[in-house]
Image (cartoon, rainbow, N blue to C red; front, side):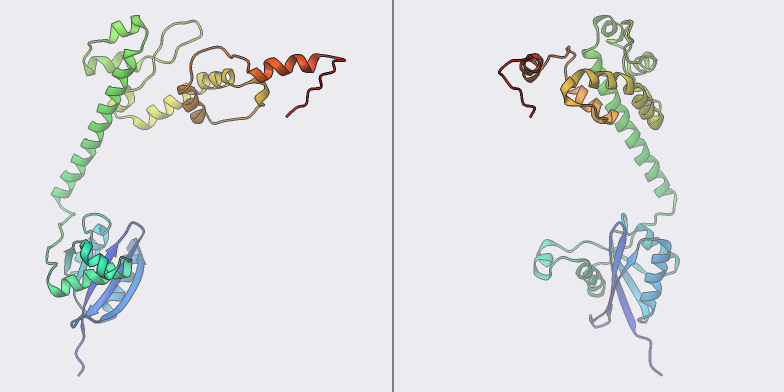
Length: 277
């Protein structure tokens, strides 16, 4: 009766695909294949590994990032998983760098015993705490950036508005600024809503509100900044807003071409002939 061969797998993980390789007990490569990153792809990879024999263990590169889903799938099927570090620079210079080579190197690291670390369990309470802390850190970073943006805007605000907002704490500063909007035609000062949506946790609605509020003033500034001879064309409000942000609030000054060419075009019977270029 023939005994079932024992094989060791190695996986090089990526965002969209995983590349797997299989070696036998003496280190001979017996298979290499690429699979999609999905539940169906994980099942196909496991069935493909089992087709070569009994799986001793599988070395996965990046069990805490791109390989987390595959690691959980294999561990749920009671397959021994070993966390493998990426090859060092010396090995990469000698063997090259590609997905099949990295997958084969992961399998050989498990076979040689140089990789023996067990991956972290990402299904317990520790993972839940890590996700909550990551979300809190991102929210704190966004809040800090919004407050810094708001305070720098106050520095260049009108004197009356700047005097009323200078020296306020973060909590007292965001509430009055949340009620301010861009300036009206009647000259009443109204500032932008830079920080209230980020501090209040409504980033999506705040961004949409900021886009809606900037359409009309940006469109007017774009019309003023264009030359009458430049033609009519449509631009998105975001590109117009970027252009207006680098411009100055000043009336339109006719170009030299318009000053020189307009009288020439209106001169009837003149010996000077104007040619449009």
